[in-house]
Image 1 (cartoon, rainbow, N blue to C red):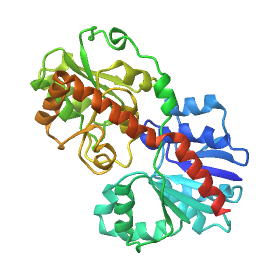
Image 2 (tube, rainbow, N blue to C red; image 1 turned 180 degrees about the vertical axis):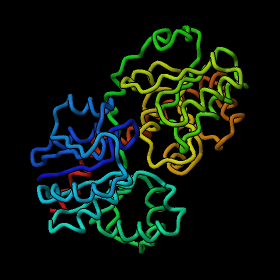
Image 3 (cartoon, rainbow, N blue to C red; image 1 turned 90 degrees about the vertical axis):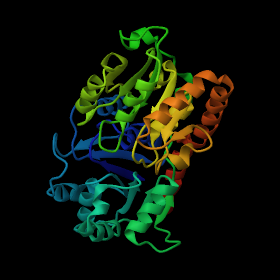
Image 4 (cartoon, one colour; image 1 turned 45 degrees about the vertical axis):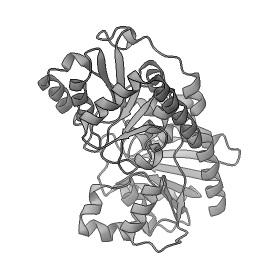
Length: 365
């Protein structure tokens, strides 16, 4: 069975990391032959990682573009070569769907919905465009209860519509368990062995809220520091914000890293401050890390973290700092949170996700 995944790029992000982790595992299935088509491919770290695994072919349509509608015609020839095309993210959603509309192929089309919301849903025109484009797909995978509920509402789907299938994202739990920590002083020269480190792994985009983590340091002892992994258009703004608050020496920006699981093992607390998520791989990795996991109580996080990690209201730096203090003072609470988080993360092992996707593919052919 020949499968083609289509995505915007392999820049750092949850959906992109999922592709890097899942494609080799799908190719390990005897009856699957899985390739990847990217709208834009440059020298991204995730691309290099996938290339090093030599798992399937990787095609690219450009180096810097994603929003070129002529990609519709470039995608068309690929469709006849595969049994199933599995698409991720906008605008790949539109270009692949419309390419299939203009094609005579009989390929089955699958789309994974990765987020609880997006800006398109706030625009009336896109409400109707989305309903048309999504109708071009045979199956829509939703990755969490909130994602499932919100996309069905957006598309006006009827109760019991079997086009939708919930398959939770997964992470490599065994790799996290086996990862070795890095000495704090080797992470940054600003750290020493007495530093207490809060780590957030996420892109610097409007969806994320690193500023709340930075602001929380104002209410915490000076040996508590914040460390951010990731890149994006709002990174510089966060750097300026830390400087304005007089916290620049307590906030570390590590940029893009490929040793995230080792960093998770090295810090004291893992945080994800965000305005919304789909099913954040960073949250599952954080819960699996063996460190207390703290996150905002927002769609895509609240339903995953509740009852395991500790949730705080969005934009509430005071509550975040209070949680850190409580965990520092109450070792029993800290231990309970860690154990609950690890148990919750085990429900999202990537092996479970791969088996469910494999079953879906078989059912379509």
